[in-house]
Image (cartoon, rainbow, N blue to C red; front, side, top):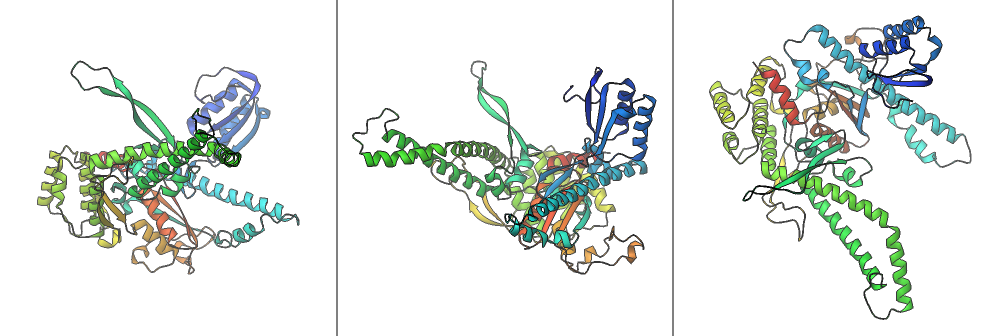
Length: 564
């Protein structure tokens, strides 16, 4: 069997084996499948389509099979509904192979054709349909499994869980689905952040829960008198639900994460020292500790046996500590070299309309504060959230300062156009009551022998955020009277007749909701929804987006849109 061969690669006929196809039902792929049928490449065919195949394309395959006299060889055709990727238990993104096709840039480019927009909408709708089909299938399978176990009177294992599960609103009330446009809030994707997961995504190479980073592995030979260059080795780490430290701290402020890593390291070292001490006492390391009584020997043997049995767990703990030490150190390097704590605090004040202690021009002009991209992000947030329109004179002054630091002004050009045409005026209510509470500086290392020297980094404590998407989501979820949601369109798939305006709105608060951001999402927004949901007992919210980008990737899209 030809394992893992790409569909469009050159493949030799193997007429005595079956073939399993796992493909998207695109025109190109369907044409190649028809070609394979006509070429009689395999004994039988099992077609698995990632998203639902249309009737017309299915008919194309049937015609090709008929003309090749291969009807009986097409054994199974499956719609797998898998065109999405679940990154967290409450977060998903669309699984489009060409993410640029459904990007913010693709949706908002000025010369987009109607046919292109229709294709983008069809792609997003098909992927969302896959998500909902899979979600329902999961609940149906779990429902069936639990009922089968409960028919056995001797099986009381799942009784309590059954009770909790079936009184869940998921089964007696439909969830709310909120579809939002990225243009609803352009400031948040640009925002410097302070939580662990969002920081990793912002400053490191973090994709599909895997972080890749360069690690120094010695020095390269250099000419006499030159500083030796360190060799770089690419290292990757998977940050998954199996990592309990990650699950506990991914949404925590970075200083708390650094302290927790150090605490875990200190605990591990204490356990390691205890094992060494026991081995030394029992003479397993060749050290003469003098006579050992039988009682002491027996007690120490039991302790050592216990320590040895916990060795695999200890080694796994050490692996995770090393992982997060390396990742957190890399993040800290970016924070200190770019003064990301300063940017984060300043942007929080901008978005919450708090008093600013330093002028924006001073930060932009400071050569030691951040990269040109950091400065552009800061200015765009100021420009987007400004209560009063920025005068042309002031705008020219900011542009000159940005140019002097090496910034490309294309993103500013686009935001200027966006502000002129959008109906969503940036008012104070748009960005809620976010903010931080400064707790001074980490003037020294956190404790003796700490891996993380936090000197000069601000100790910022996060206040409860209320980003616009969270406020709208919970306003609709709880049936709050929000003026900004009055014009939102309301659909109910169960109402087969009647116009949109005649559909009665739900008067009871929803318990579960799914919010989906068309045009791209980010971990800042996701974490804000997670934190907001924790403060609402009994509520559950899933977050999805057409693509997941960090601020640098979003800036590039804005730059492309603003080029003249």
